[in-house]
Amino acid sequence: MAKPTTIAEYIAQQPEPLREIADKLRQLIDGLFSDGSSALFQGHPVWGRGEKPGRDPICYLKAYPKYVTFGFWHGQEIADSSGRLEPGSRAMASVKLRGLDDIDTALFTAWLTQASDI
Image (tube, rainbow, N blue to C red; front, side, top):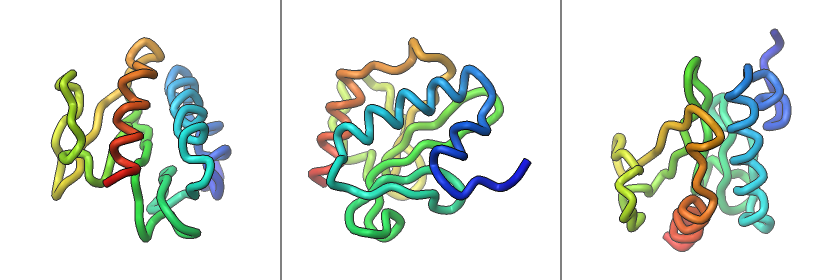
């Protein structure tokens, strides 16, 4: 399998149900960040500010064999009353998604809105 060069290729290469999860996340993120930028950065989809999302990143998704991680560079600064965001290294935080039912559109929209303001 060829190494993906676009977010669409990255998502298309994922097996089900990971492809469905990644596609739904992409639609949600793209809908909220229509003025932002997105690209593959370090091998996975990243959304950020400016022409190069890796310079001022906001969020990302990354597929693993059994789940998709949806994360934020400054995720530990996001108010998360759900307790679903797990702290990571530095100021990052993320959630692991194993099925479409794991995607809470209202909650994720609130996280994305906060993350874009940080």
